Length: 161
Length: 274
Image (cartoon, rainbow over all chains, first blue to last red; front, top):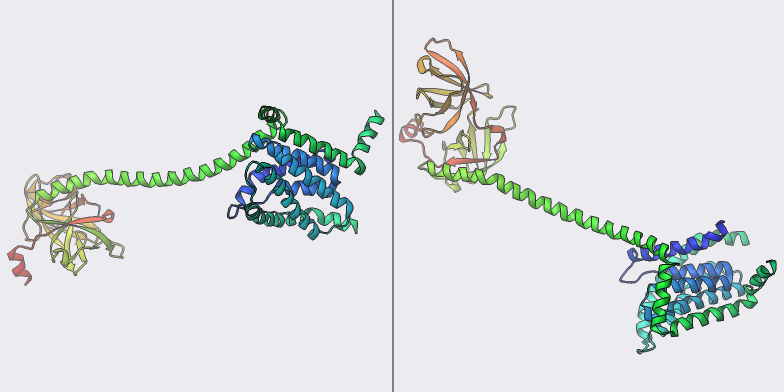
């Protein structure tokens, strides 16, 4: 039973954190992205397929609450994130926490890049403004992600050894 | 059945993962490139079915946060309003007192200085007060001090910016008094620093409940300032005199402000003092 409900519960928790805690943790208008952390976490745990499925679902959830014209942008971005991270985990089974945090950062950039690229197709895509918004939030998400990974992967890494 | 499960399992294997990814990507792109009407339909269907319970749950959490913030704001507002209300009530409470003061001021042919009580004598019995007005405000020694309900005492020491008021309860003060009803004159002094006792002729016809006022004799207090009521009548050693316990109108321990009448002692008293 627990096996079936733990990811939906984790997703719900991520959504709650994103709608509450992320707002309170905002610093200079930069906040962490708990949904990215969730998708990356699932992909690390269960590989590219489950990662892609949860990425699709998480992205679609975000799209439902985003402006309707951009429907699909988050879905594509998070789907790619889940699949890509899952592939990396499948290739390199013994990733340490530091590497996982770096992958989380890269994943964050990937999501933002795809999202901004899709939503700004009609306008001029500014790489500089994209970087100035994404970089601080990426670092913040990496910091929060490091704490989450340390908490969740500590036991599993010890078991592997 | 088993075959179907195995087929799904094989579909979900790493080898087929790429095809699943492509399929999902195709779905997502289809959504992205579809017309606005289809997009709106997808969103509204998703919101009314899959996401409805979650949305309800998340909005309740968000509402809770908003209500907490609103509660804080309202608490602060409430505190400010309570403070304003307190000031308004205080102002309303002060209004009759100020009205009385205006009438009181007009009653006497002397100027009246309002002073705030800034100190009291620290002993068990209250005999002196310190007020925040002094010679710079036109005060001098032996000026009558009173408040709304009646006589309080007189100034005993005057400095530049503050003065000491000798209360009626001070055993060193003696006042010439008069029974308001019978106009009979006597004198009043403090007994043991906490009781006011008057000595009045037996034939004065004084009764319990009679009002006692200043007689105007003695040169310090003008005639007619109310002091208190007779609470008890006792026999004295002399058959011709009666002792009377006076309950002052003014509660001395509650005084926060007093009025000082700018009345210099009469020339007779000044000569006696000199």
